Image (tube, rainbow, N blue to C red; front, side, top):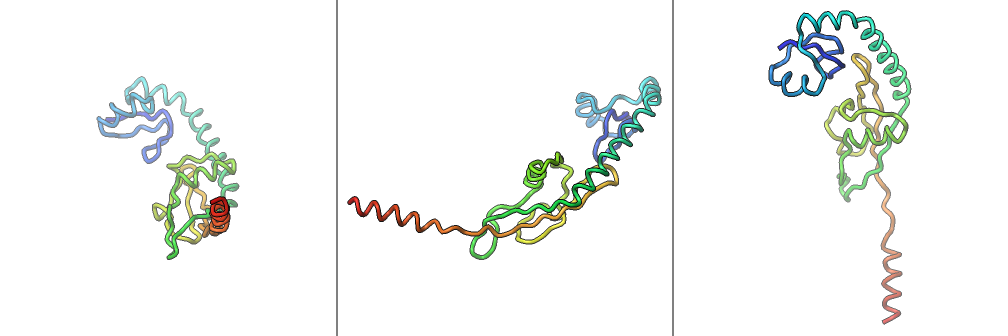
Length: 168
């Protein structure tokens, strides 16, 4: 089924593109959610009239992506993680963790635009993570996973135990 996209859609096309999709995907997802309209003569004429404004919006989005790229290229994230005695991490770092840290720094990046080449980061070290900002524009940030230093919790615990023993 041919549809015209009403907004940019990852891995499918940009706003105003006429694309061929499966009938079920169009009927059950794209059309009801308002992401696309049927490709008929009337809708094609409407989008041809809107072509200039669509191209202007796309150029604006590209410029915003370039500006964001220049800022993101300077970012280096550090995660301090706990591990067992053999050095294996208790938790891995995924795209949600990276998106949260970027949000704390003032960057609003969607989780699905973060591409961790290994799926999740499960070991100590420095990794390159790609952030897809716009078609053909992506930024590579450094993510470093460091070992969290263990704090001695035994001494305060022993003091508490000694006070209990004194009371008895």
